[in-house]
Image 1 (cartoon, rainbow, N blue to C red):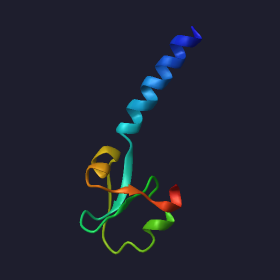
Image 2 (image 1 turned 135 degrees about the horizontal axis):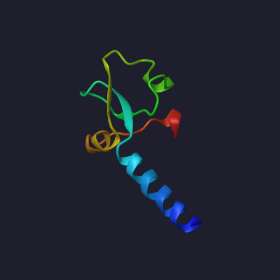
Image 3 (image 1 turned 90 degrees about the horizontal axis):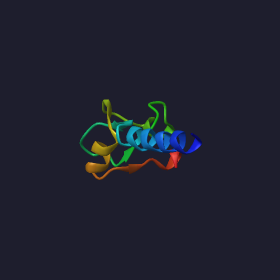
Image 4 (image 1 turned 30 degrees about the vertical axis):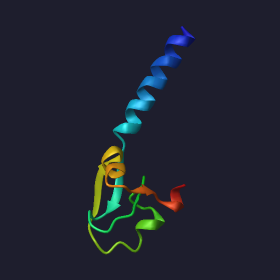
Length: 69
């Protein structure tokens, strides 16, 4: 039973990671993505803060913000 629960947990954990929402500072010029909208790295954002899928952000070539590393 423990094995089944462990497999189930791993399956859903990996699925949620791909569908996680992240925040970016506009589409143009963004270099990093952020897990929280209140991240210190978004403090200087002069554009609209946009919520996108993690997979989409990585597709834009964005990397994780150093403050959330």
